[in-house]
Image (cartoon, rainbow, N blue to C red; front, side, top):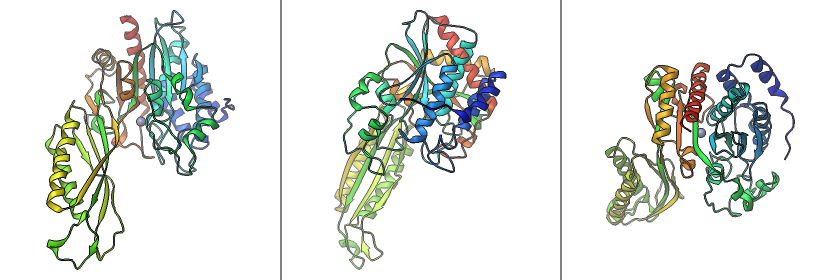
Length: 428
Ligand SMILES: [Zn+2]
């Protein structure tokens, strides 16, 4: 596939080449990519997987990777990969990455900042003509957010070599199948296997914090201890739709059952370890009317935890509670698991190096954070040791145009990444 020139970006590149303040350039590039044609939304940012904005964005990223001394490829799933060779040429790979897709009305830094910081890190070493006994690859995953199809983390799952079930039922809101969207880019599911990254020593991801802990602690950077495992369910309560005049003792009210369940689900989350969270985010009353006892209610349930086993224990407890509720209220409760995302703990050796690099950069021990949000890093942990660096984000707000980072924090992240790569080189 070919990409046109990236005219809008030339001004950033020229200015920044004369004055290579890497954090500032990384942030400026995220800002430049926050508007059309790098967004499929006129006002604000929406960069769905395999859309026109994604295509335009990869054109710019390819150019920047090339200028930073990397060879560039778009893999079979639409991830962009820049390769900065090590010595020897077939040396194993240190992978730096994050995602380039965004939700609708998204922010400019979620995902993209990690990719831009990876490019800056390579540009820094390339300018000095430095090579390491390992290659550095920068990867921009195409589908992390699941903002176009009902898929999620397809980019990193392919890069990690995980099997994925993809059929023609997977369509976007306009009815375009995933197969069709891939074919429009010259890509196909049959070739996903070739997207598996080979010979990966470690995966490092820099990402904005999607919580306000760093801001509250007045620290620019945090070290991630682990990423929560997630279960997501669809829960259907089926009672009996009946006239609102039905006596209280004769009802099989699906909504009242759901209401009792929601409060109990919340209580299970509150009683568990600090990192256990339980959420009912969607509640739908089928054929609801003011004069009808609700006959059927469908809701979602999300359970997350970092502590190994905590998610499974909470799911079991909730299941028992729902069974008891079903008997008590004479309402059928059907529970379908629609997502099972395995969490990951960051690698201790990598975290020690990253922690030292943060201390050298900021002069302070970094806060150790847990990520309740999912990241590509949790998938990449299945194929290599993984670690994550969190960057302070105003108010901890993300997936929102209000997402905001400071140049000095991004610069600190850049310094930390270059230091950790040097440490990684010393360890070889
Ligand atoms: Zn993200």
